[in-house]
Length: 414
Image (cartoon, rainbow, N blue to C red; front, side, top):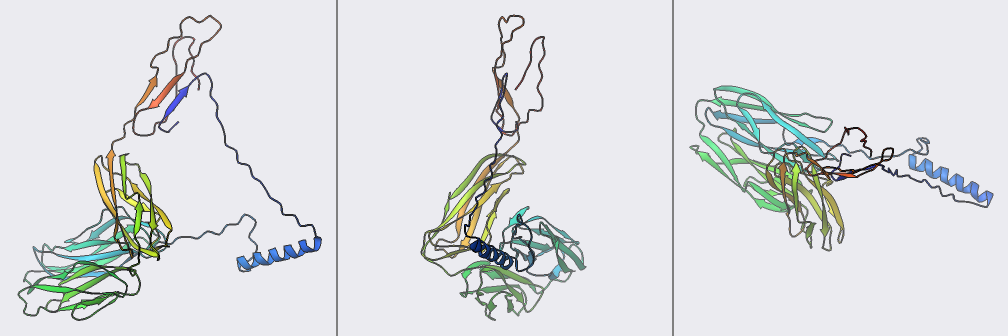
């Protein structure tokens, strides 16, 4: 009796238990010699499918296991010399390189002057999905500083740790900052894009050293995307002060294909959801074109929103569909909005799905109808029965754990 709805109390009740009927279909072989050949072939097929590893029994099952893996783009972030009283920020790309979804539950830093921001946690990453964190170093005193950034997730190798080093300086650097334009970009595999870097400060040398671990980049900032979809960082480092750098995030998609990627529904409104619980909705993606569409990245924003059921990269054939689930699990009694962005090689990429919902405090309320019973005159030795209906008028499940009645001659059942 823990579900929202009506509960009836009466003189009797009936409980129907579902039964499952197992049927066996026999395949008869009349000819004895043919039956022998059939059994030999069946046994050979069993050995072939098990790799001759032995017979495991009639009810054995083979199940594919997922293996999520959290990876970072660097094992160490070096901030170099940073003026005391100022700060320096570097981007850290965190990616799920495994074959199943994982959830990042916390991201913490240790060490004086270091902090981290950029992504609301917990955050669920499907296979191939990534998020970007901003790690900041703001020294309050001169001298060397060290620490670490630790990411706790649901994968077996958790936590993932990145070391942090920096120096608090009292003498200002000739280079105050480096800026890369554009700071974010999306290109198809094998395509190119031009980046530019600006070095701020009093240094006469305004040149930078370009670096792109994924793909290729020239000394002038001309970037060529790799042959596989994914996410890459393009970094420009000041030659006058190698401790000053900036990065751009590049989303690499599959080559454009004709047709569009349509999401049904195009938005998800979860309505009122009790804080501490989760509501889900199904989303269907359809390929209306004549070529395969490849979804290479999915990113969700907004507090409490998430998704599951997408293993990236995901290929949707022409005329076919793929379904997944979006969810809303509010942590506070307030309204929330968000967005799910799907990057693909479709002509309408990125495909956006608007998300909204309201977190509400659990309200437990049960009403009885009728609220009073009058049995009138009842002959001694006989009985009269009335039905009472209990209705859950609150916004959360209610469990009726006991019932009782007082007064001579009255009983309750049901």
